[in-house]
Image 1 (cartoon, rainbow, N blue to C red):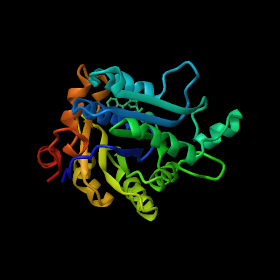
Image 2: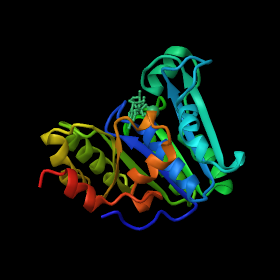
Image 3: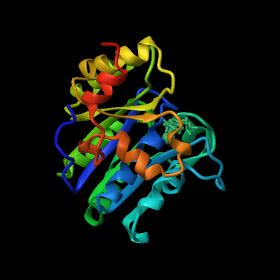
Length: 257
Ligand SMILES: Nc1ncnc2c1ncn2[C@@H]1O[C@H](COP(=O)(O)OP(=O)(O)OP(=O)(O)O)[C@@H](O)[C@H]1O
Ligand SMILES: [Mg+2]
């Protein structure tokens, strides 16, 4: 189920079934595991909303969590292209603030530059897949397509919430990706509860089914506060994401049978 190991030089767009599902923690986990595996990693947050100029954004949060896994300071690059203070979709936040929108081509150019100097480039979206970044209504999916048009093999990682409602938004996201011919590498549960309910447990089997892509891990709900985040990340991610999580064993232990 875990698929093959992610080849070096890849670009992975991290989207979610919604906002606050754990994209940043998931991005940090993939970054930390890749760094432990000896890869040079770049993390790009194209549009950061809901954060004041002097506050840490998602990229800084990734640095806090994954930074300790970087053997040399140059192995982890953190980038943010635009920041808007209001907690809104980037296009709305840009319009209200009078700041310029982010063009998909500019994001693609930045990704291409980062891909020249890193083995893995992670791009964290804002909210879910079809959240808009500009007046033309272009989305993270358009950024991924623009990267692929540059000849880079961009794929998508979908971070899903664990419980009720996640199957619908996972299926919708998978269908939207397929309509745009964007490859879905797999699904990652952003916050696996300490005490999972029936829906959480059933979803372990149903998430990959509705996504048409493998389950690539489940981050414990308190992962972000772990003493050794990189070790926890490697244990919670499948080999395709540079970890040693065993999907079949996890589903056997926690699934609903
Ligand atoms: N596995 C986890 N361990 C610890 N905390 C988590 C985990 N998943 C999510 N959280 C917490 O839940 C909140 C939302 O998580 P996160 O910031 O990763 O979501 P997001 O999908 O990146 O949201 P956004 O759309 O705002 O970027 C944060 O406060 C985060 O610390
Ligand atoms: Mg985030």
